Length: 364
Image (cartoon, rainbow, N blue to C red; front, side, top):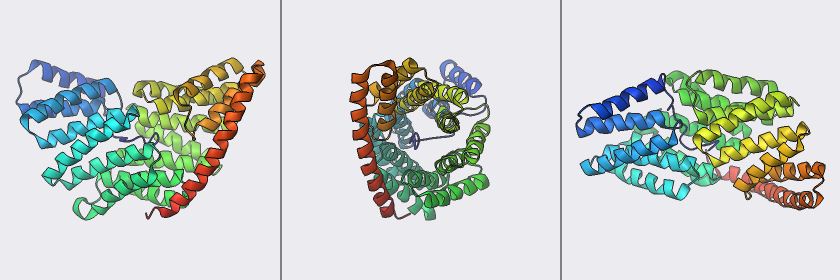
């Protein structure tokens, strides 16, 4: 998303830029066997992923063409999966699913259950991003059902965390905490960096929703500390989003502004429209609180022009536009967006009820 923003991976490695330069040098200045070239292209794609979407895509397409030429099923699986991830970040889900289906067909030919679980994880994350939580949990459960074959692998551990994130979204905090604590403990035991980051990020959101703002801040700063200098824009955008929201709730708008701008910075790196909407709406809320109504309206309209249908973001966007225009004296525009706000709030209440019932259907 972006939350379960699909494949949140340990893609930013120490000295990433130096590693990429070295791999490019090897790729462009040495002769290689097909297998050696495929290995380099995979390492390049994974080093770029969540850091440079264009080069992630370009490296993977080059790798996929070579893998198909060589009839190498392993690398066909790898590159189809990574290409799918680039489309998921762009919210092009139909295209992403085509590549994930190709990857799943390829991996089932090999009988490799661990790799099969990573494809299920990608499909589940894609559904979760769209709010199709039952579909998502169906695929996460496929991973948990493979436990006897794969044990507590990275995919298994992240599936636990993603199920926890879904329960958090469906207002089941106790079940969410149960899954997330399992993820955190296993991640500590097995050294799974992404699992640690996800668990702290999600637990921090739960504390924020429960009103324990200081504890929530502590957990989000833990996320930033865990990343250190090797920042993944996916997780950095999430942590900065939550920290900004906490400072808004504390009426600390100057602090909130800094973190909202960081969230926007990482949205721009990823090219993710959903995170852009989140960041612009945060900025609109902050500027509204600071009585800078023109800037509030400017950022809220950016969010609206990008996504005018989301039931999750719609209420806040329309509220910010309406309030800014009231203060700017544009009463007709304000009235129109207040009407839209009422419609969104009714839809959100219906969705909340539906999600409560949905949460009761999920068996884990």
